[in-house]
Amino acid sequence: MLLPSVLASSSFVEVRPGLIFWTIVTFILVLVVLRAKAWGPILQLVEEREKQISNAIESAKRERAEAEKLLADQKTAIAEARREAAEMMRRNQADMEKFRDELMAKSRKEAEELKAGARREIEEQKSKAIAEVRSMAVDLSMEVAGKLLNERMDDSKHRALAEQFVQSLPVQGARKSA
Amino acid sequence: MRKAMVLFACLFAGAVQASEHESEGHEPAGHEAPAGGHEAAGKEDVAGYILHHVADSNEYEFEVPLSSEEHVIHLPRLLIPFHEGACAPVASEHGEVTPGLGAGCLDLSITKHTVMMWLAAVLLIGSLMLWSNRDKSKLVPRGAGANLFEMLVLFVRDELAIKNIGKEEGPKYTPYLLTAFFFILFMNLLGLFPWMATATGNIAVTCGLAVCTFVVTQIAGIRAAGLGGYLKHLTGGVAPWLWPIMIPVEVLGLFTKPFALTIRLFANMLAGHIVIFFLLGLIFMLAHPAVALVSVPFAFGIYLLELFVAFVQAYVFTMLSALFIGMGVAMGHHHDDHGHEGDHGHGHKEDGHAHDHGKAHA
Image (cartoon, rainbow over all chains, first blue to last red):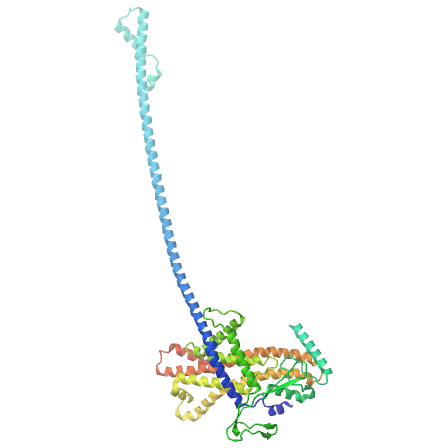
């Protein structure tokens, strides 16, 4: 309505060359001042920081890779050591087992031998003792018989008779040894 | 939020009601730069007042809130006549005016918008000195101010300069783009404070800024392609008999870019302010305090939108500047590629990207 007429008469669409001049001058001044005092230092700091951060990231990555490699090495070394230890243990155990078995067998054999020796000795002694007892019994019986018959019997004849008698005696131990 | 807006509206409605009892009503103070007190005089005065407020002037007028006192500071006038008597005021239909440049008079007067621009520049330099992290010993910024500035600086460098211009050339133009971004941002934001005016809402200021971008763009093109390449680019790379058509088109193309920058920033900054003023002016145009219940929350909403637009327009101006510089830089790469193809694989990819951008925005 009345706006167009007001617009036409108003001064805000007017371009003042003086203001353009001042704008450019101000802008250049601000640019120079800020470039020297603010943008330069700020951008430099930012770049510095970015460089530091990227360096830090880089080195962290590198160190991490290194650490991972070391860790892997350590792991394989540990596994190796463990495997070796297990192997050794197993071998030791087997050795021990064998040694024990050997020892056991040897000792058993020795004991067996000892036992057999003892038994043989016992048998020997026993048969010897039995023979002695027998001869003593013959002598004794002969003496008893001689005394009983008042020496009426011929010595050798009687003796054979007595021996025959003893022979017919039921002797348990002698029969077992035979 | 809604409660706060209702509260706001009631407050201002009350203020308007109270002021109506006085012989001369005046604008609800404090919300947006208050000045002048001609509203009661009529509907036409609202429009006139608004346009007077957003337009440049040789005086700085301000008003003490809640009083009808108005102070006027006359700013110094600098007139440089090119010949004797060229700057003598001449009578015209709007009263006495000083003759323009055509009549041989260069008007370098300090105006309201010049003062605002300087204020913005001083505030910008001051706040950057105060809050930027310039201590070499610590690389990480401390405090909200330093972090905010660094965030914006990094945004301009990474998202605008490097993305549009390229990784090699981008950092060279970063200081220019940073200055443009912050300078425009501060001028835009300054206009949102009471008693202040928006320098970027003046077409001469945006024109001056666009001229700077234009010069930088051309320098970037000449530096990248050489003067010969630059001039060759102006012919559009077509057969000589087409040159009479191509050269005017290309030259026109050179000037439309800064022209678009000028108008975009100017219109955006001006429009928001006019809308706020008209919303508040509705109260006086409709001459009823109840209008304030609607128009003040609306004006508040537009004010918040303006806050956003202040950032967006600074970003857009800087982004387009970066784009134009990128196109100038790409011109050089493009030219080089004709000479020795193959060993510019990386550069080729980069300039292809910049060209696509250029077409999208043309």
